[in-house]
Image 1 (tube, one colour):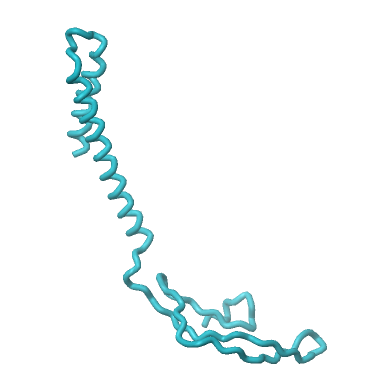
Image 2 (tube, rainbow, N blue to C red):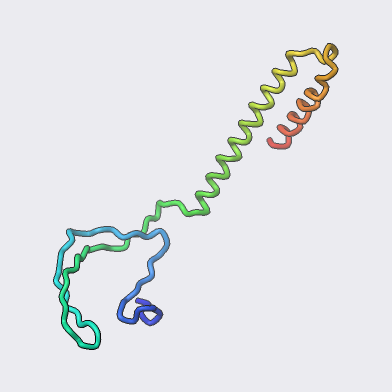
Length: 123
């Protein structure tokens, strides 16, 4: 218990390890609790629901760092697929035309060269 560090001096507080959760261990029960309120010290009773629980640590859950690493791998794979698809489509488009017949297609040849170079750099 870290009661000495608590903002509420009449409550116990506990620290739990990362990836822990609370697991219900039985049926809830209702109990009547008596409390003294205020300076008059009047006794009040109220019903409180108690749920038996235990702390359970899930050792199979992935951490945030592992999740970020997985997403990075997926994004890089997607980027590689997009580049390959772009290269394939660009190559097919350039091959449709004869550059000698259409001098304005020289930029497409430059783009094809850039795509090839980019593909080598990426792999």
